Amino acid sequence: MDKRDVTVGTGSELIDTLKDIVGAANVLTEPVGQAPFLGDWLGKYRGEAAAVVRPGTTQEVADVMAACAAARVPVVPQGGNTSMSGGATPDASGRAVVLSLQRMNRIRALDPIGQTIAVDAGVVLAKVQEAAEEAGFFFPLSLGAEGSCTIGGNLAANAGGVAVLRYGVMRELTLGVEAVLPDGRIWNGMKALRKDNTGYALRDLFIGSEGTLGIITGAVLKLFPRPTARATAFAAVVDATSALRLLGVIRVHCGDRLTAFEFLTGETLAMIQRQIADVRIPFAQLPPAGVLIELSDIDDEMALSKRLERALGTAMEEALVADAVIAQDRAQANAMWRLRESVSQALVREGKAIKHDISVPVAEIADFVAAADLAVAAALPGIRPMVFGHLGDGNLHYNLMRPLAMNDAEFVAQSAVLTRIVHDETCRRHGSISAEHGIGQLRVDEMTVCKAPLELELMRALKQLLDPDGLMNPGKLLPA
Ligand code: FAD
Ligand code: MLT
Ligand code: ZN
Image 1 (cartoon, rainbow, N blue to C red):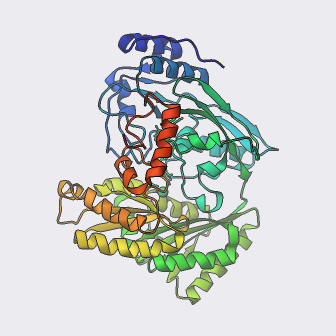
Image 2: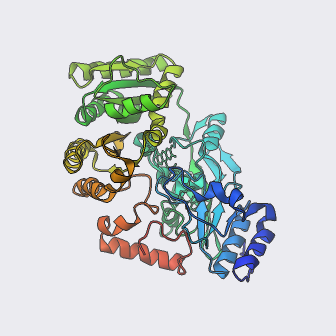
């Protein structure tokens, strides 16, 4: 597929050209139509756009990119707009075109023998999960935004979620990628090969690039055997240290049947219960902390549940677990997951949070929590850490809420100091300041602190090669 020869000026000429390419109904220039595309899910960022364009095919994406390149107009790719780092929100200049992949939502093919599924980038994650399920397979990426995030956004942000422990991040679930370069050329990398050793891994350049190197328009994803048995439990623990030791016990008893291991402090559990009406912690007393554990297998459900019960029994004998509830049916298991997945919404209702998405080597996660708790409390007495996340991946969402005696504005003014403390504790342990949410615009200034000069030099060289005019998602991921 070649890119259409497009020579345009800026402004209304470009808008007319875009309407020729995608149809007038798919070029939004009015504030009302544009509004849902200009703010982020957290309500932290708001931008302006010359237009929101909604192409329906890869060729239309290519033609839109060629037109914007010819007009030197920046492009902000957007999928489900659920980014937690402001990655899909345009700046306030009003110069950019937001390119929404929403209309590119076809499932292109499913191969039951090769166990792969080929999709458009705009397909919502939940739809891919359903298509896999209907065909008797399982697509394991799972996160709280799965009802609206898209495969293209999952790839561009290299999404993680609650099943990384067993299945890996989006990069590990992907075999092929189709992408449109900033100049409108189409790279068809839609291969379903499990092995292909012919040069640099171009696919992996686009995964995690956060829309700064081109537009992902399609992908070939791995499918997995659909689990026929699940065993789910909530265990009450004292702290991250006992949770980490519990992880070890579960691993000894359950091996790679362990699919999820989600940690939440007692304060976080209490906050969720306070803010979300229909969720309940599964204990009579609020524990100091809790762990949601899920096993899955293509085995007998009773046998799996017994295995989990034995593991928890051992943990109790070792005084790692004070109490545990094993879900007796899917409804109870779903209620436990509802509690976990409500945390993001609960936090928004609780008030302004200074959010962190850190990862450290798994063995250091408990030390990190203890050290960070001490350091932030010394810096701001009365501060309220709300800590939860994917402990088994070494990834916690270490969020901070204001001291009750402080108002939001005073608290937010402390963001830079508090984030520096949290990230110093992270980097000291050779960790990452963004485990899964990406850099976006939220963390772009920290890249100079947390990445080695050579790493930044190599990333800038790649950016210069693919996007020499700097039109792709300006202000995101790479510092100017
Ligand atoms: P968008 O938000 O639209 O875009 C994300 C980034 O990708 C932006 O930089 C955008 O420019 C770029 N982009 C989007 N589509 C394309 C494309 N086709 N080509 C090139 N660039 C593109 N994330 C996790 O990793 N783990 C979690 O557990 C998790 N839980 C969440 C829970 C909630 C309630 C919410 C609101 C978010 C959560 N997220 C989580 C963050 C977010 O859902 C993920 O990053 C998701 O992958 C973003 O997908 P999206 O389609 O919404 O992308
Ligand atoms: C999660 O794990 O729930 C997500 O990453 C969202 C969040 O951190 O709020
Ligand atoms: Zn997460």
